[in-house]
Amino acid sequence: MQTDIDPRNLIGRKALDRNGAKIGTVDEVYLDDATGVPEWAAIRTGLFSRDAFVPLEPSEVVEGTLRVPFDRALIKDAPDFGVGRHLSPEQELQLYHHYGLDVTPPPPPPDRDFGRLAGTDEG
Image (cartoon, rainbow, N blue to C red; front, side):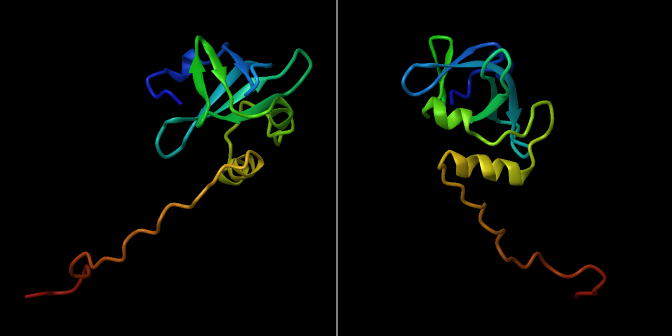
């Protein structure tokens, strides 16, 4: 996604699928807990429908609309977690798998010796 776009400016924008068919309107934007980067958009799919979560990466904003590179049917079949609440890591993983996106866990921290142990007398 274009990182220079304020996530608040996405709300209310039309969202289109990979074929240019209207999916709905961006209802909410969810930020990554660790980085604060916009990660998911909840798209209101119709007057009496629910919101569908779509990944903002690899989506992009083109001419004022959010272009989501997935088929409308796949988007509408995304797991429904409700809006207005925090997405848990497990829910995010389900969404990544639903969209067939590669999710690799972060590498483990390096195993380092950070110096002497607290409470030991060196020297």
